[in-house]
Image 1 (cartoon, rainbow, N blue to C red):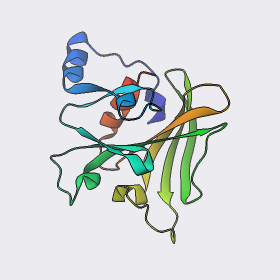
Image 2: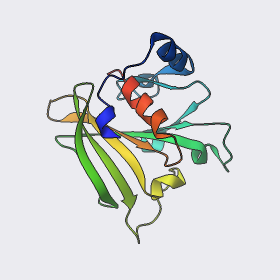
Image 3: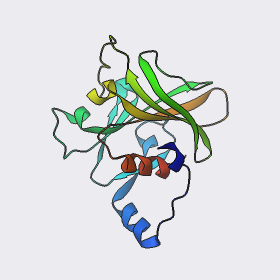
Length: 168
């Protein structure tokens, strides 16, 4: 995943226009002013803001699932810190420093540690092995950090397109 995230892909104008027309740009600051970015999501996807967790779930309403949270495809949280942080409840299977649009970032493959209770009020796939990218907003200390987690069933191309579309 990481190697192609920050590189400009060579596509024809028609191909790029067609792809972008299948997506809609979302200004995430409208859900929470700390989310200072926008990005393209598939046109059919919707957004659920989870105020008690200060998190966003980008979900596909057409998928089966007992509730909206279980239809989640991308899960976004944020934190303020002087450095990248990972939860003590997860095992880091892979970690790679990358750059996203000139911002320091880290690509992770993570899994919840065995014996740790399931994460409450989050999609069940967050308790399984999945990929995530943390992006540092500024070089200031402290800085906001955005954590983007991808449902293992979401096509990698869709997650990468979303990450590549982010505007800070």
